[in-house]
Length: 446
Image (cartoon, rainbow, N blue to C red; front, side):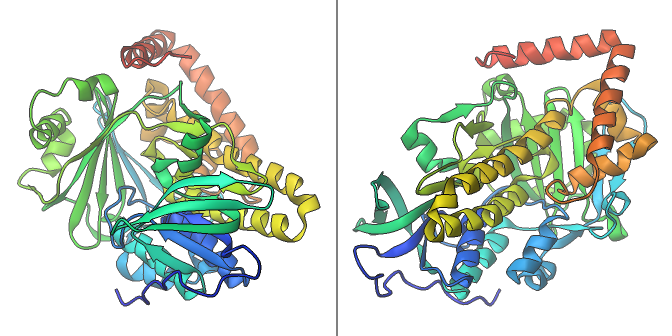
């Protein structure tokens, strides 16, 4: 990928005591998005990233709604070049004889028929270099250690790769530090999600069997006894495989992680068949309980974006989209705060509603995705009251615009409860097991 290098953080400081108007912590999709937008508008922006691009990151599956954001950033052509087209999603359940399929072209709004599967190392570097190209001063290998706020702005203390200390004064701080959750940890406002408690293990394979033709790039979701798997085909022939499971299962491991991962795959025969003869070509990674949120999303001189604010189960591939969307929403708050401070409080309230909306909308389905009723819905989707179109629109990320899906989403939820009541025995068995799984992991059920 031919991209311009990041620019060093050595430009002339702003008049007065400030080195920049906005300092963005974290060079992932959220931080790079807001840095590009603000720099393009003429703001003095310093973007700092703790590692060096390209770097590995999980979360390779995007949503069709990302396309609009890529267009607005001017990077869609590059994403098209290295991404694999994803036209929909396949669902495989051990309790059903058929395979379920949804296509984004069947959504309410037909203008977003596909998304992409990408290597995050390529996507994140593209967005980071794009922010630098738009005028942000971009610095890699710089880990922020502490932020101190005062009446005028913030002092940011950081450490470079070589151990050198750096300090900057900024008028506004954007925390896009991802799962490091810089400010949420500093303010002690980070909370684990009491309704969801999952762990994950994942790796990359070559030689996995895929669908053919235009369906080759579709994501596949496999349910199994301890949770669910993803299969994400990448354009270079590698396939991302991951298992999201209850923490008690991960705690049961008594062998090296690669062997345990292979054993876990064997518990899902449909996936094991697709991986017969495939070769593991990466390390196997594991993470413990990862669902969390912050009690606050903003303050007088700061914002929390993307995973620095909240992280939810990845089953619907919402992570990159919600991160980038938060960057777009946050850019307006920053400008309002700097230029029209009397309107800043109202802008932050609007921003907070945006930040809560995405995780809330997706979470209702995430909490129920393994329930027998929801499995039936995904395996044999029907469209009374346009509920199928509305659900696909939601899964495409079309939740912040004017597409009128919400009455149909309400109807879908009502149908879910009615069908669950009609099969009360299996529904109660599922929820009892779910509560047990959460409690067994040491998190109180709700």
